[in-house]
Image (cartoon, rainbow, N blue to C red):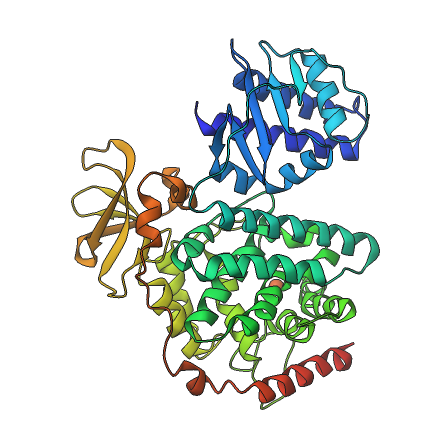
Length: 479
Ligand SMILES: [Fe+2]
């Protein structure tokens, strides 16, 4: 079965659930969403029972792991789990009214759900599978962080506060998983969600900032608050209206003013949350749009530079944003994104950090889709330390035939053209779980630490703490 049919079912289910949270079931919006959901369900159902299983943050189709789908629908997983759904069975041709009842149940509108219909909950006798892939733990942590972030976002929107402890825990778990599987984590950070951009963008920024910090020689102790700050850097956006956030074209003065306040709002929320490492996290939120050359917002003092942690996050933040399609602009290729970072080195960005970032990612970063001179199509997973040697998977032959991904090593001189992954329907992170890819990605290859970087960058713990305090006093002044 094509995974995209399941994805469409989950997407429409999620959409129908959110409509039911906003409107009654007989509202035209709900009715339209339920109709689309029913159609998607009908497409997935067949003569034999189809079972969608849920276990350990992963979705299974008839016992088979849906690795990439699980990442994309981490929040839906959370919602279904909250309703104690462990298996959804589609038994034959789906009755439309029963589908509507099902959505009402999982959306929490009713606690009654009849058994024995064409759509059933927790009635499967099929044993759901186990996620035994090499990246199960990493994926589990990724989904966990997305879930934590969403819960926190709702909490801030509702109550104006949140707690730091679950964030630190989730980030620590993600860092533990990613430090030993650096190349896999970077490939995973290419996951894009257009519906829930901010959550996935924040987790990707966190993964890349942590990998760069690790490359620079920062210890795990330093990396946890940096990861938390990276994850929470845009948390202040919760106060901005979505119309402004997704506004195409230029913003007017008032709209821009509203946007530029999000770093302070975020820093204040993190300061109010308190907890270990909150100063560094708050500093990152405050300074992630402050430029290396002193421009940007908020303006720092005349001789001040953003905190090292903020400079680190700024590079990953911009890289992920550029490589993601938004409603108002297209995505750029990873290689092009590096060129933009290089152009900004010394201006918007710390040149040493840009350099470290490129050394870590390689000239053609993980997730790059390259068309070779020969006509073959390759997705890059990582470089080998020698910039000119790239590892990845072959996905299309010279004759234009799509094949089951096959690990390959290529030389930079073979590269013909870079292609936008989504323009050819490729999800680079989905390749992680394909046969043979795990071994290649897990092979120790990328140089882990740039010796002497800490001294060069002037990382001195006491000085950094002082700077965090100074930056945070700026919040008070700006208020
Ligand atoms: Fe931001």
